[in-house]
Image (tube, rainbow over all chains, first blue to last red; front, side, top):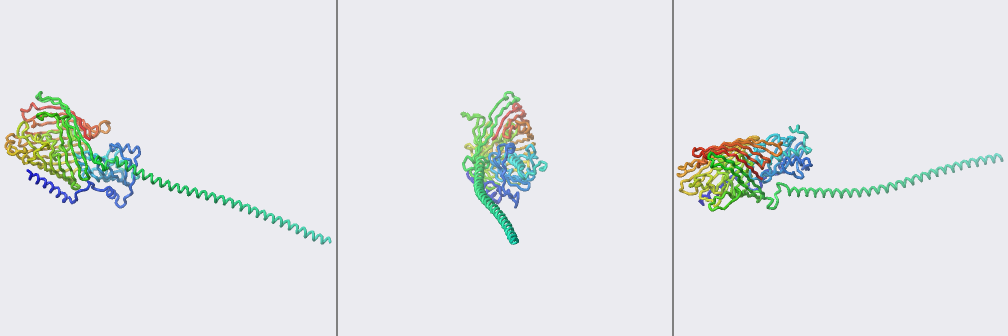
Length: 187
Length: 442
């Protein structure tokens, strides 16, 4: 019995180390898949604008509270140029925050990517096969996404967190100088 | 003489005229000079005054510039203080703030459900109406650092635990999870401790708002057997293709071979309480979720002696289970199949060597944002077939019901169940039931 346990434990470790080597990545480090600064640079290339600050007024705060389900922060950092804004946002999934980068271009989601993932479940939201559902979605007047995002069983709260961040970014984009101003333009 | 006088007079007159003219001229020039002198004086005084004024204005300008410089410095200081204040407030309230204190890295959560069951059986002696706080669960999780975290689940079932001589008390106090998870890299994790067996749909995701029906489905309840947890070690991986896998070496079931629950899978749960580890269980799962809305998974488990006792007529146990979940908008379809193959002389005689079950469950969830108090409502139907070892675990059951979510983490449930047992001798156990429930998670 003891030998079986030892063999089983060694097997586990061997499989684990093999996967580590195969994946070609050193162990350790937070589950940060892309640094926020790198995400911003990816969005704008060589012409990355300086950081701007959005201070939501009373009306926008109420709208953000409706979208996020909680009171929004005092201010939101973003980078904006030529009709495009990039936001780095945090929302709690099940019990830990997910950090995501959201790029809005001409009123639609151009990209959304998990930058830091801290949850025990819901890993699927980190990957493109999930996030590509958000491509080209815009925000309706009723503050809903223009198309549904399919749920992932076992990751419902992570999916909802990503959806909230997408909506919040679309909403705040409308209050920046990069907004084209009209919903028709977004469509 | 006269000529001379006249000439003299003329000269005098002329000279007088000239003198007068000269005098007048000189007087005019003097006046003019005087005037010019006076103008110059005035101009000089004016220039002096202007100069003084300019000096005053220059002094004022210098003072204003100095004040402006001071103001600009104060504004810069104020902006810096404001930024620091905002950053401090954001650090206190930010969801992603790591914090240096242990409570910043500790989270508490939980779920619970209260049931009401009204069962009318073919044999009226089996009728009952019952209400029960089926379970109350607390999660306490902690991040030691960015790579290593702890998860735990503490549960009380049926409201209380009464210590009885034969251990037949109604309630249970259980630790259902207590494990360390460590990131090996971005795609692989190692976990060690007490964790949920990677099998089925409900075993790892069973908070009340996440499934339909007041009671959990019987196939997973009896065969998988949810909630199923063991002590052990596991590794797992997830990839951008949507593929994921788990491999675990854990303590195993200890299925009884005698009594009313002989060879019953669910009765083999040791719940890691002084659990026999004579024979370990090896579990492997492969899953795919690379297409939006689709989840496919299959699990295989092997235990060389599922009774943990050699020579008792029950030896090897092998489980195979597979499930599919498909979401499209509000529509969802779930299907699961599970099968145990047990080896041993005694279990074959008892007819428990093959135990299986399946269910299908279509549902539709409708978001109702305009109805005020209701976030969404869902409708479901379920058909399940169970072939367990006991006659009461061999039945077909269909059910329909609704879930009402006033908010995503709270649910009210109602369902109707109709169960028919396979064996004629068990028909008295057939029943129709109405169930009500309220559940929550946080």
